[in-house]
Image (cartoon, rainbow, N blue to C red; front, side):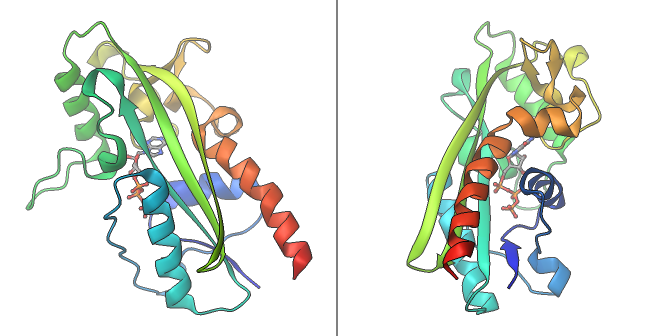
Length: 203
Ligand code: ITT
């Protein structure tokens, strides 16, 4: 029996393996083409779309599938980029790098005094297409006030611009363990881990 993670994002895989403390398998490692259309309007809907698509592709009866849909919601931008975080600023011909997305977001926020933001993570554990658990967790923080305050080499995506006042550091300045201990993904993953143990015992 395998535990699959319905993602193409190697950073997410690394974090989730550390959070769960077990090995998980992603489609690219088994040469499975995986390009689900994320047509949902919520993190939960998109997580379920990814999990169901991979379950259908692998067909494995006893294999569990986990999926994560996540993103950064900025209050001054009415919750954007939100579910579109991975595609923020992209145009048909051009996909921005994470660094470009971060700069674009800082430009869009300008000198707004309202810097509050949160990462959300909806995580699904799918046993069959009709048996699944969804959890959603968040971590509250602030968007740094300027390009000069964008800091850190750790993590991925928007981590260098996501500032935690209680740590005095950005997410990208935390160690992996520190980030996983408090992050949206870490909180969701710990809940899923407990459910995974219970479902495994049922087999
Ligand atoms: P999959 O759909 O293949 O899982 P993805 O990266 O496209 O990979 P999402 O659709 O869930 O995943 O988009 C999430 C985006 O939100 C991700 O690309 C990052 O830009 C951002 N994000 C999510 N969690 C993050 C984190 O912990 N740190 C920084 N950015 C994060």
